Amino acid sequence: MFAHPDDAETAVGGSLLTWAAEGWEITLCVITDGDKGTNDPADSRRAVIERRRREQTAAAARLGAAVIYLGYEDGALQPTLDLRRDLVRVMRRVRPLRVVANDPTVWFRHGLYINHPDHRAAGQAVVEAAYPAVKKASIFPELLAEGCEPHVVEEIWLSPTDEPDTWVDISGVFDAKIDLICDHASQFSRESTRAAFSRIASAAGQPRSLAAAESFRTLRLAANTVRALAGE
Ligand SMILES: [Zn+2]
Image 1 (cartoon, protein in one colour):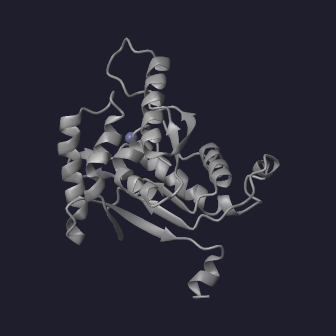
Image 2 (cartoon, helix red, strand yellow):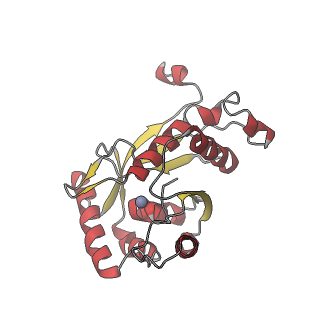
């Protein structure tokens, strides 16, 4: 569950390809339309949204994933209760074992750029939806009327992160990850994308001596936190 079209592919595309090959069923949830993703003042908002959805749909098809669009405005995302409710609705309908999102605590990357505020807002909203709202019927009771029953998300995987505890070796799928990213043709040129993501994958893999990796900060959630802490 990520802020923009292309966020899932850039942050965790190699892991998604790996999991898809292992037989995992994948649903992408794209929170904003990516409607600020143009430098051409003649581009209409509608045209940008259509282009970005077309690109995202192509990437999802390559991955064999379903895709859900929430239609929020690009560049203005906030971790509001409305967004939390929308994310809870998706989690209760899709009922995922594992939810993947941006680490909301990441402000700066590679000494080169500031993490997009939409990424932090999306990560925060996803984490706040996953606990406790998704599993408590009394939170957003209106969702029950829609048939969205409570659900326990077992795992949260956050990336990119400055506090990794889990690494996925993406050496074997690195080229396919670049293809996936380049499905977003309005945003990425192949040559610089390959060079940039090769550097990112190499840096992520360094702590585990992997040539190319994606790293995650993970949480294993339990239906009852107190019992889990008690070791039951
Ligand atoms: Zn983004």
